[in-house]
Image 1 (cartoon, rainbow, N blue to C red):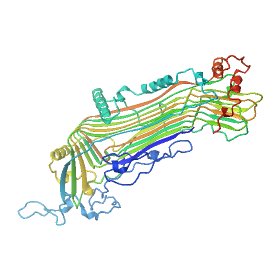
Image 2: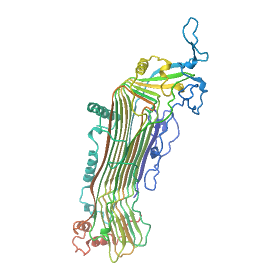
Image 3: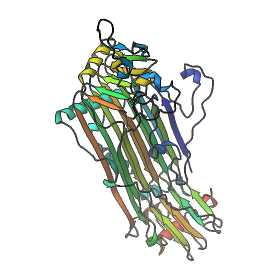
Image 4: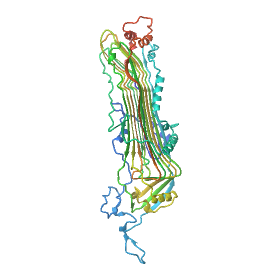
Amino acid sequence: MSDDVTSEIIRHFAGYLRLVESDPASRTTYDPFQHAVRSPDYAVDLSPDALPKADVPELASKPLKFTLPATPPAKHLTSPEAPPAPAIDVEAPKAWVRLDDPALVEHAPAAGGAGPMPHPSAQVPAYKVAFEDGGNDKLATVAQTNLIDDDDALVANAGAGVSEMHTADVPEVVADLLGQAKAAVPEDLVPQGHSPLRWQELVEERDAALKEAGGGETVEEGTYVNGVSVADKPPVASERPELPEKGEPGTQVLETGGNKAMNAAVIADLAEATGTLIVLGDYYETNAIVQANVYSDSDQVLPMSAGAGQADTGDNLSLNIAALVAKEVSGQKGDWIGSKGLDVNVTIADGDLFDVKSLTQRNWISDNDEAVQTTSEAFSGTYVGGNTQANQARFVDLANYDVIIVLGDYHDFNMITQTNVILDDDILGTTVSGGEAAGAQHSGRNHLVNDASIENHGTGGFKDVPDALEDLIATINGRGTPSLDDWADFAGAASGRLDVLVVRGDYWDINVISQTNVIVDADVGLQHLAKGGGAQWMNTGGNDAHNSAKIIDMGGIFDQYLGGEHYTDAVMIQAEYIDASAAVVNPDTMALVSEAVAFTGLLDQPMADNCLECVLGRVGHDDMMGAVLT
């Protein structure tokens, strides 16, 4: 059985958030624009190695591209060092002037000796400042959850009790594995709930503790794999046991594993991609990546199984890959004032401003199968695994302002948590009577991969706030009009328009991604060939749990000013918990075989020399439905 479930959310937004669901309702219900166009369904295109083939990872292989107002060079026409003007549609360079440019002032005294006179060619550019209230909050919480319950029982006698062969309590073991994964996350990074305001409360408490401690931990930039700094990311092996092609009569193929759970997410927080960022209070910066791979792969091969010593167990792949990246954005600053003047639009947020985005992705696959495959004169293929689940989401929050001024504190918090849990404790056995048969038993090769990166883009460091800038801020905070020349050094002033945001309280810039995959695949797989001839192939493992996440956080691109202190903290946790990973061939021939005999109802009959053959050879031997061909 193969149940493929995919959910995907992709949304670009600027100042607000709308969600597009896999099965969208009528747009007249949600969309104020009353578009009567039905949104297409989304699907995740998978590559041959079952990873999402989407454009999400491309951000890792390209420089970040953004758009700022294009401007002429920051020198007047007569300067020999002026670089060539960019290829944009603007007036000739002679139209770009500085009000205090000495080349535009006549030095001959005016009548009465009043001093220099304006040059005849000098024109005072137009200038105005407009104010509005705004700075809307953005609080976004999205949860994507997939659940599959695919516990199959393919035996001749439904009440035979094959499940009792597993001595472990599967729900209890899963709860223990989840508990180990939960323990990997520090308590101060776990909110009381997952709503945006709960995250804001957590960040507030954490930043207060950070200030009291005078700062937090530091982690050098770079890529880390399983706790070790590396130059390049390792390849993620995709080799899996391949299902055999249809073989000769009598061949048996049984697959109870091969489940895949995948999460992929990107938050591109470009709302703060401003030319100039000014914070008069303190700046708190936290980047945290917490990853955990937890699995149990304790396999038991029944005694007397054909080729028990050659069973392919274990060989699991567990990778935690994390990267912390800081990149400075290079480009022409483009300040000064153009001849057309300058329009300044000031938006004032009276109080705190919240920009909080929280994304949660969950996959849960329960695939505990019991399958008994017995003699058949035809090719017999039984496939009761191979389920696939995938979540994909991408948030792109675009910039609106050239200048952001925060009168309070700035709280910059980015966190990714990733967890993979696989329970793959299997019991398997194969027998052949009256001959030899080629066979292969696979019960390991599970893949658990977490891949996360947090990228901070902008200018590095902060400059002190000069007195002239403080005077400008005080003026516009009181809705006054500064002089035109006060804006000349701001990036983007040459475009003729500046959009300015003033936040009178604190600025809360929070991005959180949480991803979890749980695959429960505790199987019992038994095969028997009564006459030999043909081959036996079994796979009870080969499960794949994969998380991929990226947060791109933008700051001031050209200038950053800070009036208070800068507190930083970096958290990097890469944990691996293994309950067991071994091929276990049970030395007690009766310990498990007696359970197998129990479901046949043959406890009162004498045991044959080959106990496993006795059990498997009789179960469904005369029943055409004893083996399921799919």
